[in-house]
Structures are given as C-alpha cells and as structure tokens.
Length: 507
Image 1 (cartoon, rainbow, N blue to C red):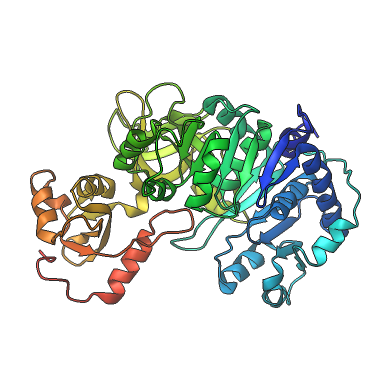
Image 2 (cartoon, helix red, strand yellow):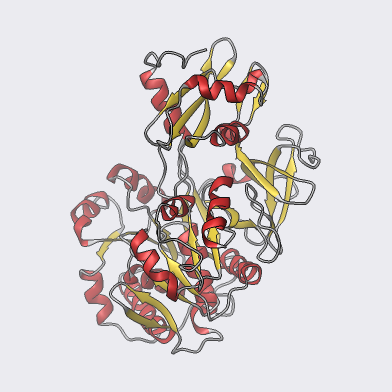
C-alpha cells in the first residue's frame, strides 16, 4: 500500500475531519467521508468483476460521484480511464475498443448509447446514480487499499489525436505521486489552501494537478460543475487558489468587479493547458495585484516546468523545470543540444514521464531517445536566465521556401496590434514554396482593422518570408475543451473553403 497513490491522497497524514470538498449546494465532504465513500466504490467495482489492472472507463459529467469513482478505482488497483464528455459515440467507440475496459461508467442519459457501443464486447455498462449508485449504497465503507508498486498503472489518458490515431498514455502511481510532491513544494501548497476547482476532470489539469494536489496537501477544493464567472467571483473571498486555462482569465477580466480588493484573500492564480498571452498576464496583474503563475505540462508527463512562486513570473514563459525533471532543447534533426535562445525540440526526463502508449510499443520506442528522454513534440527555447519558452508544436512549424517559421513569433507581433484580441498562424501546402503562412485574426471590436493594417505592422518587424501571405478575419478560433487552439481544424477549414478572400487579404 505504501506506493499506492490513493494512500498518499486520502489516508496518510490526514486529519480525517478536515474539509476535502465543498460541493454544489454547499455540502461539505471531509477526508473521512472520502475514505468511506471511495471504499464503497472500490467494493462496487469488485462486485462488477473489475480486477486489479483492469480498465475502468468513465464518461460522465463532473460530480462528486465521479471523484469518488476515480478514488475507488485507484484504491482497488484498477486503471482509471476518463473520457471527454464531448466525445461522440463514434469517438467513444474507438477508445472502448482500444482500451477494452472491464466496465464503462456513464451518466444515465447515455445508457442506451453505451450499451450499444459495448454490445459486441465484454465490457459491462454501469450508470452513475442508476444501477451503480444502488450497488454502491449496498457496500461496506471499509476497503483494504490494494498493494501496488510505483510502476503499476493508475490511469490511461488518451491524447487529443488532432493528427492520426489517438494514443493512450499510461500513467503510473509513481508518475502521479512524484508530480504532486514536486508541485506541493514549488507552489507552497498547505492544508490551509482552498482551491476554486472549475476545470473538467477528464484531463490532466483538472484531475491530476488540481484534485490530486489538493488531496495530497490535505487542502480543500470548491468543486464547481464548470467554469462560471459568477460562481468564481462569489468564491474568491473564501478561496486561496484558482487553477485555470487562459480563457478563464480573459473572461474574468471582462468582469468590472474584478479588482485588488476582490482578490485580497487569494494566494496564487495558476494557468496552463494553453499559452497565456503576455497582455493577459500584464492586465491581470494590473487589475488584481497578482502575477499569474504559468506552467507547462502535457498528457504524457503531467507538469514539467513552472514559473517560480517566489521570484519573477515572467510573461510569455513557463519558468523552470520542476524538481526531479530534466529538460533540454535539441536540434530536431541532429539531436545536438541547442544554445541559449536557440529554438529546438523540447525533451524531458524524470519520474513524472509516462510509461508509454497503451498497446503501441513501436510508437513508444520512437518517442524516447536512447538516453531515456521523452520527445515532447514541442518546440521551445531556454533564455539566458534559464526561463523556458514554448514556441509551438513541431507539427505547427511552417517551412516555407526552405525557411523555418515559428507561428508563435508571428502571433506575438500580431497580438500586439491595437484592436487585435488574438491570432493563430498556420501553414497550408503550396506547390511553389512548400507551405504558405496564413494568419487567422480575431478583433476585439475597439477599432476597424484591415489586412493592410496588419501587413504594415509586420513589415518593419519580421523578415519577408515570415509574414503571412493571407490574413483572414474570424469571429472565433476553434478550441478543444481545455482552450487550446486547434490549428488542424484551421488548416482543414481553410482547405475546404478556399474561397476568394476579401480584397487586400491576398498578397
């Protein structure tokens, strides 16, 4: 049991009567409650035929029951497999076929669909609040936590799969435990902290960072069903920490009541899962007196770096490697280490790095170097002060006329133009140049912008080959559930429409 993630989250070193969760409606759940209720879920999974090492797939809206199911699964030695609630039946069918879970837990509203998806296999279907709820209620509230090693799987999370087949990242008890140990130290987490939890819990950020860190620190969390600016503003006076994606912060900045006074009880604001604009960072600090702490992680590794808790939280950077994590920048072709401020591929190594991709040994081997570093697929650099900068994904790199173009560099310049809310730069195939640079721009409504305005701004700041050959104005950028811009969607939409652009947009 010593290496079980569950024992570190719930039972070790805890005052059992401390508040763990504050749930919608104001109910309070203590650590004693989590221990007892997760025991019932562990027994219920056993009653459904789940054995140690079996996968437990879950596709259900955020709730206390889902949290308890997660705890129950890792407690009895199963492998937790959360699925995005936005997945279609066709998408879910792939994950179920690939992971072959022993049980698929869903909301009662999708029971018929779930049973159809599992009809041809051996996966059982159980519904939260339905048959599973009744089974849970009949179980005892004590359970001997399964003895596991740090190498045993705790969870499988599927990558977003924007290109090609989605891959199941296998995360061990040791991976998840090492990460919360490092984060507690870096972010100065204590039992006195109260987190505003408005993130989904089918993702690394909301589940393994927000919830695991709260429980590991014996702190408390206000469990909100979803991001709701009203609910967050109401929670600020009784909380100390907010973890969010950049969209949280941009939308909260639109609230006139956001102020230094409104945030006086808060200790730290943390952002991740997508790049935070420097302008958002600066405006947040001006309005609230707090510098947002940005960090960098991914499904396969959990968190890799963080801006410092004490010291300069530098806008546009993701700080320094966490304790125990080794990070290096190398040339993507030669694997030769890059110098300061040189852009290259980010590789990481440490106890946080996943065990590999589920049932994909060849892909796993290809993603690790001979000396054990995971090839993240992210492009970045380390500046002269040691801060890590994320430049973008390797697949988003645009190669035009033989020159490498890093979209982040162009986006930073466009975003600085008055009247621009945000931008996304991507490449499309071109018979002559290999790829052409395209910029999608969202305006903030404060002024009328034409493509020529953006072209004029970039002309004196970027080399000709870096400047977009097309500038298109959109009402919004396509994003996934964690707020990341989906450039593959932009590329696909552009290829499908290829309609004549507004006058002045083509060069």
